[in-house]
Image (cartoon, rainbow, N blue to C red; front, side, top):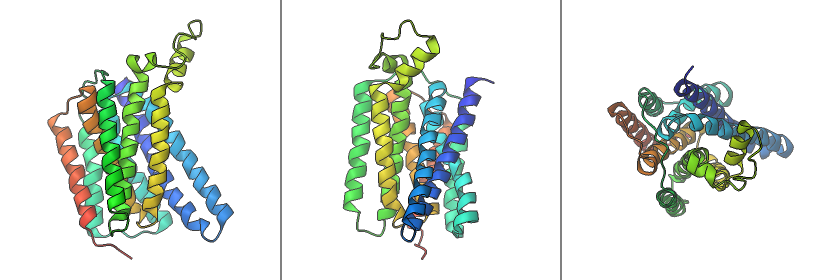
Amino acid sequence: MNSHIISVLVAVGAYSLLDVSKAVQKIGISAYVTHRVRGSLVWMAATLGTTLSSFLVLYAVSMGSVVLVGSLSGTGLAAMLLFSRAVLKEKMGRQRVIAVSAILLGPFLMAGVQIAHPGAVTPLGLAAFAAGVFLAGAVASLALRNSRGAGLTFAATAGSLSGLVVLFQKVSTVTAGRAASFIDGSLAEAPALVRDVAQVVVNPYTVVWILLSVLSTVVLQLAYRDEHVSRTVPVFGAGNILVPVVGGILCFGEVLHALQWMGVASVLAGIVLLLVEPQQE
């Protein structure tokens, strides 16, 4: 089994775990109102699941393209929808089904073609891109925090921050990123596998993606206060797809195939449908 297929399978499993864990976080938050201990335990268990998924994504992106792994984040929607329908009993109208289907179609189109991933990166370019995404999310979230679309705005911001995680994870695994490790050169006598793992984990880029992951989780909790899981998670997933796709092109020099551009368009169409959908009580 080649690295491309392994990367796809691991990414699908990781994002399925991530999206189901986010739905369980919503259960924990709801339960906390009447049963604080139970709600806290459920939320912490779900957060452990999101943490594990982050390291699975790290493994997937170490073998594959940033654009490929980032685009696959939408595949977790299928697992989340089954979970939310079976456990949370959330209803889905026709427009929401079409919107989610459009977002779910995008990753399959983007993953259908194997692309070159040179792994080259410009640190300053990545820093500028990350700062732009962070600033745009902060401005939108603050400006719309009291509006009707606040929940979806927070979800999109959280997803965009999560998308940045994939970019910094990729940097931590390439030669230039590992060379910046805090322990570079101090494990010269260690086995190659131990040295490689240590260089990726004890790395300034790893510190950044962990902080971004935590911040993304915090912002997502704000979205849960105002929106259903079946609305917040698709919008979160859209941001989690589009940021790595754009970042992969601008910061890593990856090139999209025509099918993958169709996938991006499909995701954007799904976002628009969700944003204009009448709110359900």
